[in-house]
Image (cartoon, rainbow, N blue to C red; front, side, top):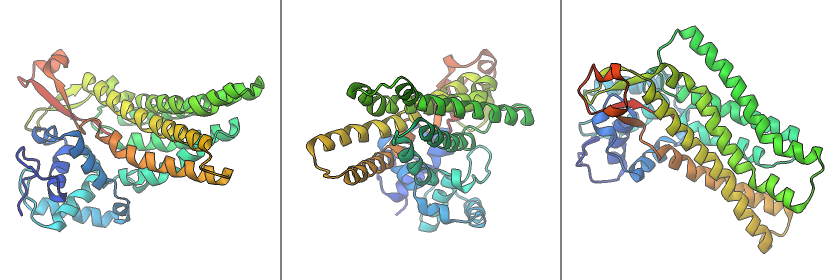
Length: 343
């Protein structure tokens, strides 16, 4: 069966149709189709791209995949007729940065995010002692910051050495600050011997979720700050680069920060609430059983929320002409321009 890739008339939500839309969704050079995605279609796309089995592919296989796609002679608006080409698109989307065409290190590819971040989230949720909490959150934010750096927009123009130096400096500061904020409630509780039931409820149950969500958004904004300081490339409907826009960079970072806050805020909040009701209902008879239930809930919520958060906004972002800088307005008559949002 022939399925038009990224076409507006594609009706099915099967694997072939999803993959066609996937290619146009994540590849910023084809913005005329990448915005024609519903949230549900984007969710199905990310469910495929996040398959951990894609991590088993070697760099040579990824390069051969890229070569296959180039030699196939097909554009993303043409039909995909065989499974080999479909798998090639999926592997490329999950392993190669859309702006630079470089292979992303295996630990920081989208399919690796859940297996690596899950134990870090569970460890950070334990809320035992301030020092342990600080260490767990420091490691957690170190990984998510590295993921953000390697999967953000890659078109920021600046002196390469100074940009990398600035991002490393910003990253270290953001990671340390976020870890300190995460451990701060426990520090106050222990220092001032605040042991009441209300204090325990607030510090151990209520505060961790909004704090982790806010700090996750904070690290994204700080690490990707060069994007709204220097601007990112914006393109017209034909994929032609029109210029660098700081406002597009700001929009891209805001959307990514919001999606990250929703991801980890929800992952901390829902399991804590559900575990509280399980504990009160005495469904779990022992502390070990309760801990197992909590780990299962965190795993389920994070696994479900990851594709949800990635699907909140199109990967190929859109910005209206009225929102752009004057120097870009003078170089194009397009009413809307497009950019790679990053993840």
